[in-house]
Length: 284
Image (cartoon, rainbow, N blue to C red):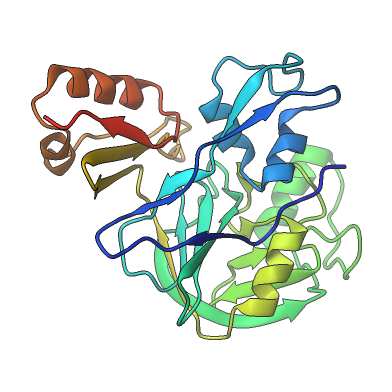
């Protein structure tokens, strides 16, 4: 089993800058597959796939060099509390009075069960949470499996919440662990936010009650850095109809990219095939 490098911390850039992390690469060895590699570097499964298009996630070629998406631009907004950016399937935690930001891959709601955009806070912390499926979950489970789902599942290996959970305000939505390794960094939950067990344990230990939480939808992130312009584009979320939302290039994005034909071409390539990687534009 891969060793998870949980609680990955990045130094906060100066105000006005958004770039964190460094480019990182992994050479495929015998026994490697994307889930194992994603856990090793604490990145999301889909993020790893997007960064390495055309590579078989279950049988990558031995010796192949993979890009690890460990460099990114911070989301727009105040650097405080927790920010979850849905399209990039990442959670950012900004501890108070700290010069660091901690970044974690997350799983979010699948089609028809979308994780909502919201402004909230951590309202409760639970260790060994009991899972009580909703009526809708029970109905879906019966339709899919032909048998009834238990009214509640106690703490243990069969509990889909894992060992720790953080509640958003007074809502039904939780940040929680999982009893399955697969699904982190994917759109696979019933609306809650899933994390690797070691990651949610770290958050449980370090995040206080009433910590602000913002869940946002930022498919395109931009940043002016010293002598360079950077852009990072992610695949838009899929609507309840199963059709991916259109990735719109706003006037602000077009102005940022500028009139260079090379930059316009680069933007078009990124919009058509988002890789979720920080890309440098020409300064002209």
